[in-house]
Image 1 (cartoon, rainbow, N blue to C red):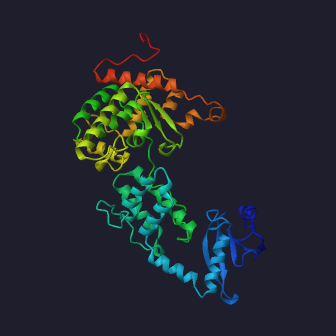
Image 2: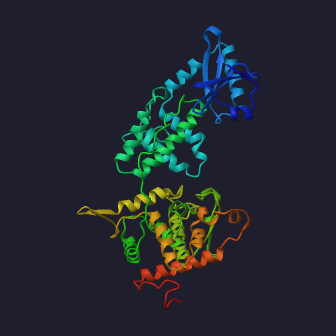
Image 3: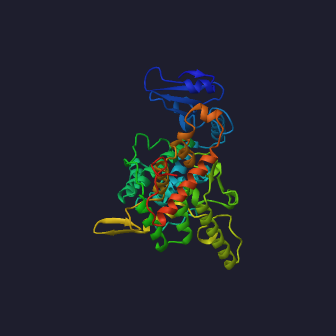
Amino acid sequence: MPQVEMSDKFCQSAKVNSGRKVDYFDTIVKGLVLRASAAGAKSWYVVYGPPAKRSWLKLGSYPEIPLGGEKGARQRARDTRAKVGDGGDPIADKKATAASQSVADMVDNYLKRHASTKRSGDEIARRLRKNVSGRDAGGKRIEERSTGCIGDVKLGDLHRRDITKAIDAVKDRGAHTEANRLFEDVRAMVRWARARGDLDENLTEGMKKPSVVVERDRVLSANEIRAMWSALNDADMRESTRRVIRICLVTAQRVGEVAGMTLEEIDLDAGLWTIPVARSKNKREHVVPLSDMAINIVREQLAEVRVLSERKSREVPNFVFPGPGARAAVTGAAIAKAIKREEVIKRTVATIMGIAPWTAHDLRRTAATHMEELGISPFTIGHVLNHVSATKASITSRVYARYDYMREKRDALVLWADRLAGINAGAAAIVPLGSKGAA
């Protein structure tokens, strides 16, 4: 049992020279131990009690719990030993907590203290509540909860098979992508809970994603675009939902970013839509030039929102596409459900609005593909899509070259809108740029 004056540098380099594990005792705070395993994992413990009957209390893992600081291992060890000095029993307290706290409690804590800070926090909350805890933020049982919910399982009894049960229920209903995302959510939550000390082990360690999802390559042809655009008028959905779908195709932007559009983000006179860092998937501000077609769709939506607000005697919401009640923007998930509800299966063949099934994200891929067919460079399309992997791949483009490609983006989106107008007017396919007869 080596004794060392621990430092951050030491904790980073601590390792096992022989055997399965080694315990390093801190010389600064009595009883603080850093345990390093042969597999490379490092955990904090505090040891207390007489030599003949020592108690080991796990504080959490390193580096999730650092050495110093107000919530670091040294301070936690001091607090634990102080509690023991006052006659307390930290291990008994921990067991009692584990026996009283349920998976639903863990989900609530994770969403409140960690996931809520993430851009995708709302989606994480939806997946975990519907498929794991089965309870809403108020603790009430969700009517449409998954059959695999494990919210009532106590943390002290939680087993890997419980996690498998929750994920398998999602996979069994055919939602393979949702199952993979839920697995990632649960894995992140379990790691977080282990680092805090709520769980003694990472139950997801060694588990694999439940499904191998084939990357989608669905692109709507010109004829399919024409059929979809026309059928959209009679689709059983709100008019604002129809406009979100059209804007997704016209601007080639992500459905969640379109659905969450706010008044502050748009300048219709300048024809610009600025997606802020907080709402951009890659955490980079993204300015989208708006074609006349896109501007007209947004203007129609704003006019309808104002009329409805006046009729309801309420203030005009800040959201361009408000959800029911106008208390929040409509979500990308709601748009996806609206599209899925239009699916018709006849003689085992599925269609959505008269064409092969498609999603809102397929519209983004469709726009990009048709722009490429028009002769627009992939690099410009990358800027339109806000794909950092394409536009900031080198240190030159990432650090030194600061040109925003606004003119090229506007030209691309205007050209694409013109093609869409031609397609939806029933005109013959427009000749791509660079082909004989192109303007």
